[in-house]
Length: 418
Image 1 (cartoon, rainbow, N blue to C red):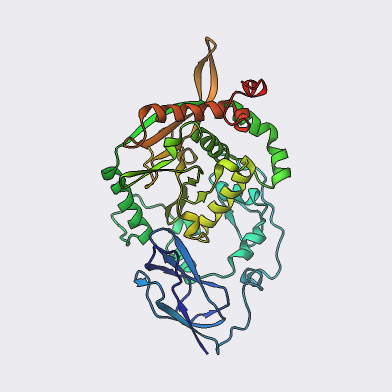
Image 2 (spheres, one colour; image 1 turned 90 degrees about the horizontal axis):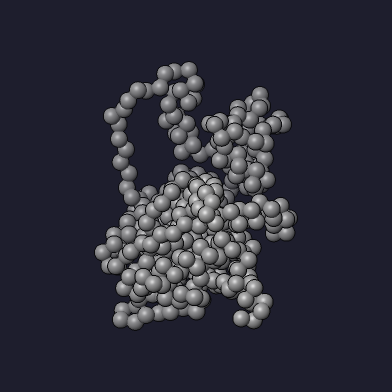
């Protein structure tokens, strides 16, 4: 029996997609629910899965743009694979006698990579990958078993490595005149168009402030273990800023407004887009009704959405909408920047790196962990008074986190009914 695999409808506004990458080779044996291709739309990268097991025939090459509903491949179910790597990972076949792998629990910052101590195979782990494994309680065996199979592209990537990385014996090239040319993905092209349109179609300004992060960092350090025990995940700064933004909106609702033709749309709900950097480009999944959620609920949702975005499991609906956006360049070391508005929204908050700096407190110079924050806004709809006032309110809430449970008001005034 021949099964046809068609391009599904990613969202109401999407009529065509681009075949970004085939994850299998024409003629491969595939298994039911196995991911066979990456599909690029102008909003997200999605995956295409096999609906049945069998032999695949690819009809549309990589890089082609096709309409929704187009048949891109077929699966001959009369050719049945002997076993499913989802149930019997190839990694276990490669290592029939697994050896216990000891990995140091701590990694020094100045160590470029950590080598797992085992006779075979010799596995190298970067500090970031090691931290991600620790955060998600993953062993090396679990990571290897999750790979399922070694593909043609994996072998080609190893072959393309410089000899010094494969053998660590030859000298490194001193210079190169080579260059690489590749087609922009549909997502990257759309992102480029939107960024240029924002600069041309809005009256964008940016205002800045700085936040003393001492209180939030102390709270996070003091209660992190309890938070993990209670909610099963670590507390980050993004969820606290998201809650602070949602509370500050109540005092400056114009920040949460949008222009639609000659009308201004003011939403009572606060749907916050969280900018996430992925291998395919920037994606902005939405935390809806942030004003009605706790910090723990926001943290959980951010984690789930970010993971979906990075693994290409996120839906178009989860990327659609939003009344405000937060981006955190501090994760990459940015000290200060001017973020670009995400239309049709009217403002975006930029978080940055936390750096110990000398500041004046009660007439004394002290060292505090400080963060610069930036608010880019559309001056056509947001006045300077509201933009500055909003940023000051966010600063006030972060420096006094107890106000996040009193609607942004002074707890003493709330207590006394003032």
